[in-house]
Image (cartoon, rainbow, N blue to C red; front, side, top):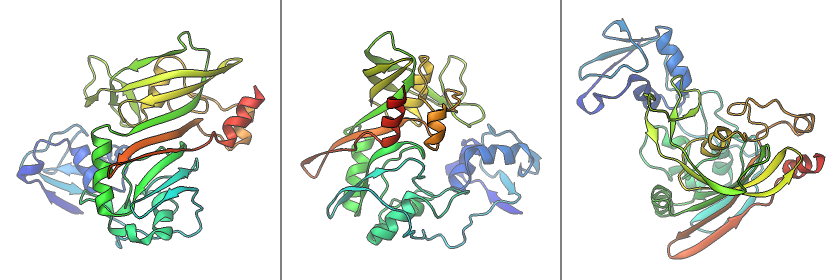
Length: 312
């Protein structure tokens, strides 16, 4: 049984958020389940995931650990990286669909972070002091596991800090393409809908007046590139960078991304099943200024996009 005593700086935090921060390798969903199962006690009593911690609270944890005990990230030389560009400051890749960006409790070795460390060992100390940062060296932004496309990684602390500031201040332009279900009434427009975590923390939801979790503004610009039967190839520019933003925004207007079984409840077509089924979302372009130099990188339309479109 592990015990944590809450100090003043952590008072006021929800217990599920506190534990997700302290035990980085556990998902928020897993922590919520453990709290509901009674594996987390506060002052010897059961609590809800929404419980707000108070100073001097005693948390008792059953079956929690910070494994692996060796907190160093292990290089993985077997994962192939599609490098678009590299110099002394950055490396830009076209991430393949199905590759998780950094380790989690369930996957510790077969991630982009492991592959990057194998090819660029100098990034091992390129991270901040946030919880779990040693598992994501050089990484300044993320793509979903099944989203492909352009990512930039910092190779030194100077570039890391500069890129993090660029993302924080929204000075980086991201452009995506997706294949969505249905024909859009408007061929160009803006989806401006705030996003919040669902009460179960399994996914994001469009915020409503009675939403109790933290609400964040979210804006996505879209333009239809091509239409075929009951599908649309869409270009998307997110003006904010919320988790799953594009996926939930398109689903919210009745045009979920093909293959998205989380937000679109989408059963994959036979064509998609043959392509190892994934949601058809691709980070096409990334533009930013670093050390007074402007960079623009792009990744071509993936093969599975082309095959799916050809099948229509």
